[in-house]
Amino acid sequence: MEKINAVITGVGGYVPDYVLTNDELARMVDTNDEWIMTRIGVKERRILNEEGLGTSYMARKAAKQLMKKTNSNPDDIDAIIVATTTPDYHFPSTASILCDKLGLRNAYAMDLQAACCGFLYGLETAASMIVSGRHKKVILVGADKMSSMVDYTDRATCPIFGDGAAAVMLEATTEEFGVIDSILRTDGKGLPFLHMKAGGSVCPPSYFTVDNKMHYIHQEGRTVFKYAVSNMSNVTAQIAERNNLNKDNIAWIVPHQANLRIIDAVAQRLEIPMEHVMINIQRYGNTSAGTLPLCLWDFESQLRKGDNMIFTAFGAGFTWGAIYVKWGYDGNA
Ligand code: UT7
Image (cartoon, rainbow, N blue to C red; front, side, top):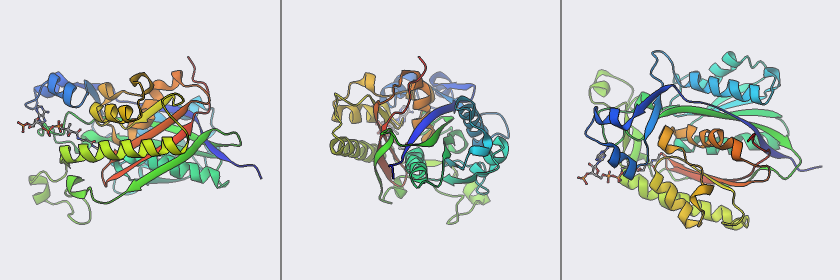
């Protein structure tokens, strides 16, 4: 029997219209454009600020564009996964809402929560579903409305995050393209350094939790930074080495967009020139599960069939990893 690989056959994306600039942030908290640009690398981020709209709104727009671009019939979609930390509701899943909005009648749906590694873990999951032979077309969305849990009085976190969504289609191929190798890890040691204090089953919402601002992102940035640099760099180097990839044959590094200094460090470790690293943090900030597919969405026209790409991410948990993908089609120039 021929070996089946799971290949990405299209990308769709969506970012909200509202642009929150560093200058506007500097009117909200004690910060400035220079600090944010040199310490993080974000110039502006998109915010979904219309009342009553959540992550599924952006995810739906991205998935709709994807289905149009790939000429997909809704009846042919076998499964949809939404990687997100900011679901519309605790339950039902955001993915189930998409089934209705996209008219998927033969699909099953689930959310995947792995913080900023959501898309990376989702790629491994969706690829395994294809390789099993039991699924022909799987939609994977990475989507987060980070503004729903950012404290816009906390200067240590509010410049970092933005809202956005992007989606990819995974299909079967017998060619040597697609998701080739992965190294994914979780250690559970990150809880004290990056979490939301209340709203879950340990500490359900109450007047106390709201009064004490316990429904926002809590991050000890310096510690997270150190873990992110070493884990992302190590795992990217490992996957490169075991697949004979190096600066001469890697077309793209696709890194999580949390901090430009982290991206720089990962690229330096592999001696990859920055023009081979996908970067859009300056325009969108950290959209958590949205960053990797939003990079693909932005850079799609530059991608060529056979391009060697390493995706890498790091997030709460801690979660981290790297996936080697051989790109499956020429983007339209
Ligand atoms: O995506 C999930 C994973 N998350 C990450 O990868 C994030 C990792 N961490 C980071 O990216 C960085 O640690 C931050 C961007 C969060 C912070 O940057 P930093 O260079 O580590 O800053 P710091 O927290 O060490 O703070 C340095 C100084 C402090 O002042 P003092 O104590 O040195 O006087 C802060 O109070 O910068 C100050 N500061 C700010 N100043 C102006 C912190 N935030 C701001 C701000 N504007 N927005």
